[in-house]
Amino acid sequence: MQLLKREAVLLALAPALGMLGVYAYESGRYRFLKVPSMLIDLPINRLLMGGVAIAVLVTLLLMVIGVLLKWMIGRSWFARFLTMFVVFYIFLGLPALLYSTTLQGALSSLIVPVGFALSAISEAEKKVSANGEDRKVLPWLPDALFLASGVLLTSWLISGFGFWNERMGGSRLCQDGSLVAGAYRDNLILKTLPKPGAELDETVKLVPAAGAVLRECNPSFIGGRGITAGDTPRDKRLKSAAKESEELQ
Image (cartoon, rainbow, N blue to C red; front, top):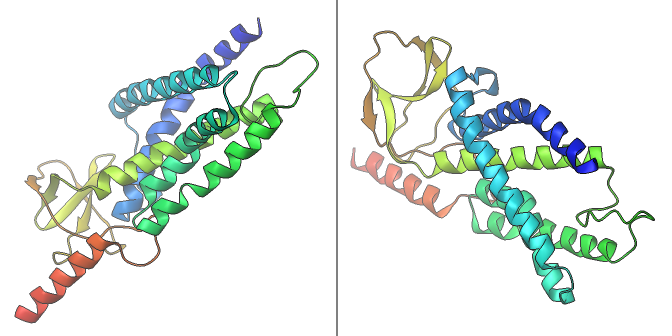
């Protein structure tokens, strides 16, 4: 009966969770492109496509975590610690890694999962309650707070994927020397492209989408900062190339 109640709650929350996931992904994208979050628009087709993709991702993550938690029962202390580390790294370390733009930031993503894994192992070895409740991940948290924490951490993870996807670059859409960052209602969100290797500024421009002539482009620029300490190697190369270009001119 308790299991059915939890499934019913998750089913009721599914539309809201899908919308939150799509919003989180777009917020990660816009953070890199330096677009205000107030311009995030969620049309029905994007909600449907993004919601399904996010639902599949979350389902696969939960299945993997469930298999890992069952596998660690009766294992050695190190095996249980490694399992808990992987579980916490998915929700705490991986988002930090996706937002990291330097080696220091990537290494720092290991710290918090290690601490939580050690804490969860020590608590899981204790008797959680008299009725034998068997939740092994942070068992001292109330169920509602545990669910809320999971939703927030999953949203952060999805946001990290959005930031990372934009940072990897690739083919984009441009219009008359401006980058098409997204769409807001019936308008395109444009960002003026800087010189190659330079940094995007904070300004945005909205233009009507009707009649707009778009083309594929592959611009080279420095976007918004994630978790960083100093310039990344890629940013240093871009700045160096931009400086050399200015000197030649």
